[in-house]
Amino acid sequence: MQGTTEKHEFQAEIAQLLDLVVHSLYTDKEIFIRELISNAADASEKLRFLKASGGEISDPDAELKITVSTDETARTITIADAGIGMTHDELIGNLGTIAHSGSKTFLEQIRQKAADGKVDATLIGQFGVGFYSAFMVAEKVVVFSRSHLPGEQGWIWTSDGRAGYEIEPATDLPRGTKVVVHLKDTEFAQEWKVQGVIKRYSNFVQFPIELNGKAVNTVQAIWTRNKSEVKAEEYDEFYKYIAHDPGAPAYRLHFTADAPLAIRALLFVPAKSTELAMMRRDEEHHVDLYCKKVLIAAKAKGLFPDWLRFLRGVVDSEDLPLNISRETMQDSALLAKLRDVLANRFLKFLDEEAKADAEKYSSFFREHGHCLKEGAGTEWGDRRDAIAKLLRFETSALDAGKLTSLADYTSRMPPGQKEIYYVSAATRESAEASPYYEVFREKKWEVLFLSDARDEYVLEHLREFDGRKLVSAEKADVKLEEDTTGLDTDTARLLANFVKETLGDRVGEVRTSKRLASSPALALNGDSEITANMRRMMKAMNRDADLPPAPKPDLELNPGHPLVMNLEKLRHADPALAAQIAEQIHDQSLAAANLLDDPRAMLGRMTALLEKLAVKK
Ligand code: FE6
Image 1: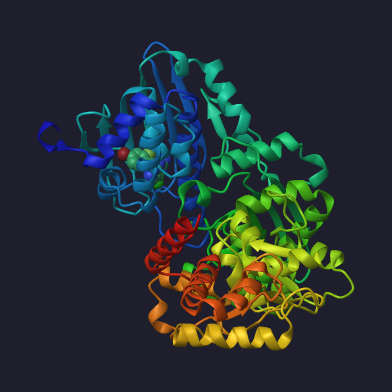
Image 2: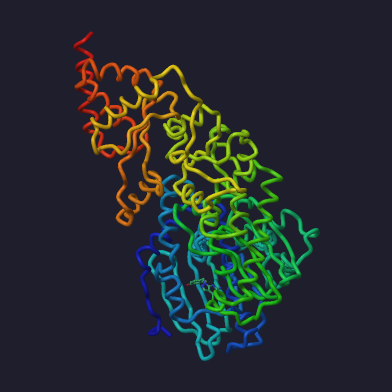
């Protein structure tokens, strides 16, 4: 056999990853057992499926069980399965390249955390690279594997996790994979220790697990059991097992249905959003689809709408054909029905949870709300209305950090208020300081503060809630009570004419306002279709070329403001200075509305005005 041994080097990223695994992962070293058993279970699950759907496999009678053996004197732990096994190329491909989409992100994350000194070994399983975790405890790992494909021979893969790996052919291997971990110390070569580790979660593994010849688990799919017979800890352990999440889930929904489809589902919402942590969209789904306990599709796309991609769990339906493929997953009518039932059931569940514990629901929404917003922005009809009820926003009526539903907002509306108002701004502070908010603060009408870029899209898509229009404060036609202390209507009109003449076509219309309290003037986006914030977002995404040019904003003067009242006198006494002040008021209003692109002219003029002021005193 000597001459047939091939030597391979690890790809640079893999070498780095292994280095991090060996030197930075120190807590929870035992998870490597869980990861290797999980790989064995996945491989067995795939084989069971192939068998059930009539595929050709070698050793068709080999029993699908997972055997673990420990040897204290040899200092080894061995995990073997009769799953689909790996070919020569798969053995090389699996560990030789970082083709897996998550691996690069994983590497970045783990590097970052290693620098902060807080690497959690469970990270590794979350990215589907659990096999590497063996190198936390191993001085050498030997993998024996033979693929289920008829005619394939066996292979032996050996590595110390440093120099690279060797691969050589083997004769007489049974179908499946055997991983022999040569340990650095004896801890995981001790039977009682390993037994404790396996016991904790092995009841969720769908295959018998034997440790040194003795059965350790009772195989019964947790989702097929009666709800009243499953303990909360068992659910939590199952969640940790399938989600590779060390923490408990935020929500759990275990339900069965008989009509229109026979369904048993066990769904979880993670307490923490992986999307927020990774700062990127998760393109995968994480719910597995079973038919009578046989896995039909892992991470099944099309089982839930994309905006429910944060869900973890399993769905089992007797009504599905076993041979449903990835393609038919997308367009089968049965799947569409299933997807409908599941999404509606989950929305109903969320609605109940939101009513039962609003605080808890708010923390859920902070983590996963962006997904629901995506749903509200893409769905139509009843589904969209159901999601709209589940949205939460910051609002002027509640303290910072507290969230309201649209239903609670409408219940607080005073009799004269007919619409739901919102202000979009990057922060709550700038929303509160917005000139558009002024009239609402004076009237004590509630305004939603939208700080998430998505919110405005969502509310535009919704258009109304419970029969009430959703209106941007920028476009709202809301007036204050008549004020008799300011300029009279005719004088105010003359002043407005003067300002319009001064500004020329730098401004749209200039008129008197009935909605201002403390600002001298307000710039109003004259665009009836697109809010200023929307325009900024489009610009940020380089999509502003698609938009019609923005019309010049209108200017509304506050006839009761001392500066405006004095300006009226000044335009007779010193027209040049009055013009300068009018220009300054205009620029300041634009700045307050976040519509001023270039502040330089304003700053120059400001300096000139201050100079005059300094001379006078
Ligand atoms: C993980 C070893 C590379 C199968 N069965 C089992 N483990 C599997 C696969 N893995 N990938 C496929 C893995 C190794 C190497 C990857 Br080298 F176990 N048990 Cl089919």
